[in-house]
Each structure stands twice: as structure tokens, then as C-alpha cells.
Image (tube, rainbow, N blue to C red; front, side, top):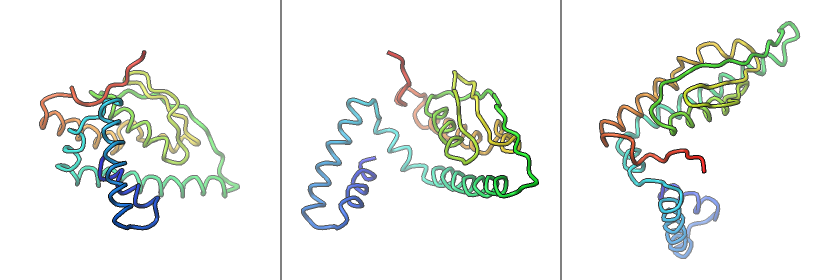
Length: 170
């Protein structure tokens, strides 16, 4: 996370000099401290990401490809005068162990054109689809499989889920 924050600092700054790099290191460090201290972020998440880069790359490559495929499907629906769009609301259950996995799935569904996660209530997801064809296989998608792999690897590495931030109601 610290390296990501520093990278964003450099990108937004627009040029790399010694002064901007040093100032960026300080600002990134302060923001990282704030995130860890006040937002329940754990440095274990960073270590996990560094030890499993292939899994993260695979997940984001899948997300990118699904976004591209869904874009073309939605364009085809819009441009075709012969296609009758049939909106649908689908609900399905998952068996994730962490809120983080639920959030990642909900965000991945919402980022994919033509679908939006309406609610997540425990393990129950409710998704609005622009067309019923976009709902096919949503419950057993590769996203779900990869998120289960994330959880399994985390549990093997750390023996539980104590360090993953929890969604709490106050």
C-alpha cells in the first residue's frame, strides 16, 4: 500500500525530482500510518499481496477481460434494433468467510457494464442486470472461484482472518 501511495504521488505530481520524491515518501508514510492506525488496515495484507502476485494479476486480468466482454455485449444490445432487452434482478448466495471477499465480488460485479450490485446482506447478493443474459453464471463465476482461492491462501498463511478489516455497524 505504501508503494502504491508513493506511486500515485509521483503520477499526480507529474515529475520526479529529489524534492518531490522525499516529500512523497513522507506524505505516503503519513497516509499509510493513518490507514493502518485509524482504518484498521493491516500490513499483513501487503505481505500477502507481495507473496501472491500471480493471484492478484490473474484476478485483475479476469476483471479487465470481463469488463471488455460486457462492454461489447451492452453495445450490441443498444445498437441492435432486433434485440429486446429483458432486465432482471437475480439473487444468489455465496459462502465467503470474509467481508473483504464479499466487497471485492460486489465491486467486481458493479464495475462490469450491464450489472450492478444492489444489496449484499450477509452471504446473499442481489444484482440488477441490464439483460437476463448477463446474469448467466454469475453465482459460479471465476470471480467467486478466485476469491475462494484468496481466502484459502490467507488462511493457510496466517491461520485465520483476524487481521482482515471487518465491516462493522456503529
